[in-house]
Image (tube, rainbow, N blue to C red):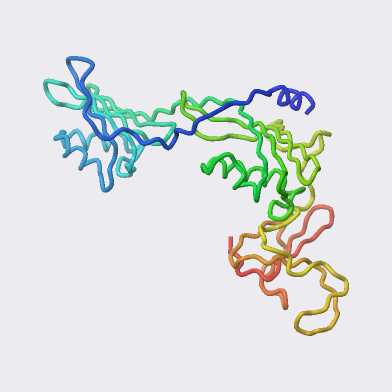
Amino acid sequence: MKRNILLIAAVSALVLFLFNMNAEPPAEEVSAAEEESSYTIAGVVQARDTLEAIFERYNLDKADMHKIYNVSSKKYNLSNIAVGSVYTFELDKSEHTIQRMHYGIDDTSFLSINRNSGGFSAEKVTLPVQKRVGSFHIYIQGNLISSMPGSHKEYHKLALSLSDIYAWDIDFSHDIRNGDSVKLLVEELWVGDVFKGYGDILAVEFINNGRKYFAYRFEQDGYVDYYDDRGKSLRKALLRSPLKFKYISSGFSRRRLHPKLRIYRPHLGIDYAAPTGTPVSAAGSGTVVYAGRKGQMGRMVRIKHPGGYETYYGHLSRIPKK
């Protein structure tokens, strides 16, 4: 554990990065051949395009199209070509026959089809993803997501990951204060010079209401967890809050005035006001021992946790069967 913390802490360079993963591909065009014996057609899948429509557009051999469909079916179904995906055809200049075809499946892989003596062969090629360590500093104004350096979806994923890491210590719906700050080290995923997203969060310093919360990622024998600066796991018996709520409508009390009966009686739980359908998480690992209707609790789930704890979740709008 100590060695891991020292290794992470030693990384201090601030990496500046550009988001170009959503850059528009070039408009459909025919490029000049680099070799005299062949030429290349390059394009982008348009709305309502099919492989057949693309073959018709360039007057390509339909017999070759069926062969390509068949040979690539186990690698990728070309019936599912997506708008915005890039494709290329390399053709023999004299016979106008396809020698090879490339189709971009996603950001990190493409389908490569090559003519051979038996017809065509197909291969799904995965581009190597390089991991780099990046760091940045966030100052909280309003909430964590709106305080991220940008609105890119990768920032949203980072904010949700931070919320999961600190779920046992910080309620991100109500504990966050303006002026709080977050410093973090995170994996950046690159394919060549193109940024593709974020990987694991490696280390965090979160200052919330003047108190520092540290988190260090540590993996051993396939098990991953986050630990504080004293080497203690951040994972505790129970979460701070089982759902993202708007406000607490009724707190725990041994003697609460019932809002309808107007008499004092115990209220041995906490009522969270949240929109109908808001997902509810278990406060900790355990076994579901009851799920169904239970008197004034309405739809209720009861979970037994290690150490003798039990938690109840009532007034649920629905309980999924699985």
